[in-house]
Length: 324
Image (cartoon, rainbow, N blue to C red):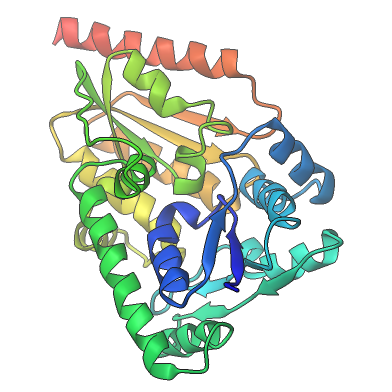
């Protein structure tokens, strides 16, 4: 009987789900992602997480709780570093321990340390460590990994080609056709994928902007080499991987004449995000002076307030267009 493994639909799900899903399925596992975020999942996460935890981590708790009675094990990677001399948020590094300590009655947690900050060769150690949970055959693990990398590359080509990650995942699973959303104004939406593409916690910012007549592009639509090139303009190297992606994308969008405004969506209580938002705003003021909107969300954010601010922002773009 196949092992049923759960993958929480939170945090790095929006970056690496095609990789994880393909790897586990090629090893004979049945993959079950948690459902899209709803009020119960959010409330369950809030009830177990400490108050100081940011909203994305609270959501992860809720998604784990949703899965715990449905699967044989839950995949909770310990992400430390995804590239040389760069790191992930400390809360994500300690996530497996926090989950174990705060949620009773869990099935097995498949925990693997992923730390490429010193040696990129450690990736293969993590791959084989994970694969041994399902098979003792190293050749089968290697073949599954190669298939997973191909699927992840297909996913990245779609996002770098302009498809939003949340839609690319559905297209790859045959749940929706590839469609174009062209509006009157092109708006750059900056932020972490787990904030932007969770429709419940983001108050469906992307959908609201589209209904207001804008074309939305995000930091995940910018290829990696462009991110690296643009982020290198900073006087000091940024050692937060996700922060570097946002900064690099912001610099890229500032040079794109089609971009008429920039929005940064961040979680309340996120230290790196508060610094990144300030950096982006300062660079905007020094260069093109584009309209800039900072949206901060937590579990108390009201949808009406977000909608009002987005409407005012798009109205401002229309006025600038009329006077330019």
